[in-house]
Length: 61
Image: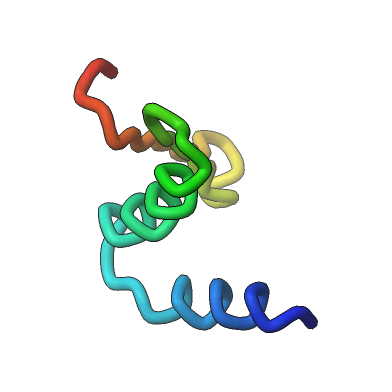
């Protein structure tokens, strides 16, 4: 694996909350000069009603 992939994977394994994950994702987005950053997550369980969540670094949602 590339070094940046390993570093990113290790960083994500050490987070304790979804806001930390957003901060990790938002930093490279800012360096790439994006105005905002968002990500979504869909839990695989329960199969009948999987939970979906969305996070954004802007409060417009």
